[in-house]
Image (cartoon, rainbow, N blue to C red; front, side, top):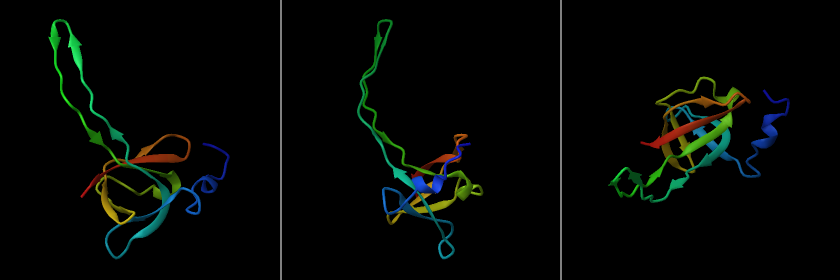
Length: 106
């Protein structure tokens, strides 16, 4: 665990996002970073006289949050980021006090 005050890195006046977590009407506010990277198309060749070409396109949105703020978060929980509702897929702490939370749209 880092000795830094992690809250210094999660500031909504800077780049962090305000996130609502929980059932409608009893949401809790927390701060984190929302990211929705996009995997572009890829062509794949397998070699060995076999060649397959296909297009792959994927986007897995996720949150990065302070682990202590979300210890009771679990798969299936509801979160709202920038007005869009998502469902928590998993809780992935990284050992530094920060966790990555993969999401999917409801």
